Image 1: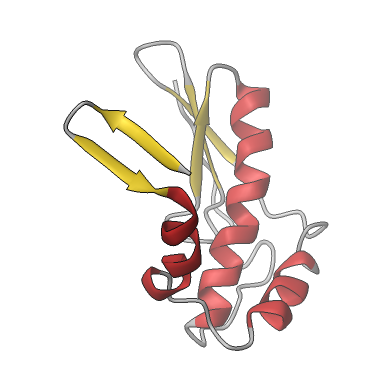
Image 2: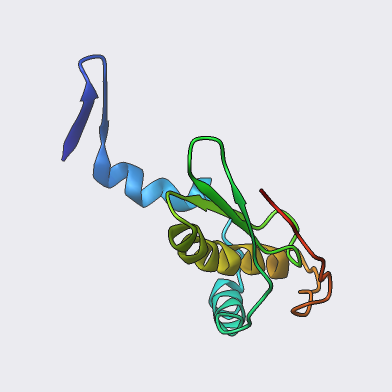
Amino acid sequence: MTVIINKSFKFNKEAFEGELDRFLDIPENHDELVRKSESYRHVNYPVTFTPLPDGEWVAEHPDLPGCKAHGRTREEAAAKLEEVKLSWIYAALAEGYRIPESGQNMRVAITS
């Protein structure tokens, strides 16, 4: 099947999907990393919320540096953060980093 993106660009979808693994750096222990990261699904890391000027919210796990998500509401940001958390943990495990315990970097966050 040929998929036309616009009038000047088209590609063969089946050929692309067959070659996709060449472009992804999937670790050999992918299944193990997925299983290990899933085991953190119910670990309750502290969450800080920060309102944005446009009315949206950023939710962040301070214990997991850079683990952030945003949403239209605090609840949406928190829900997205839980999925981002698993991706963050997967990537950290793949790189050989130790996963911080919940509350290890506990801090008080006051946002307006």
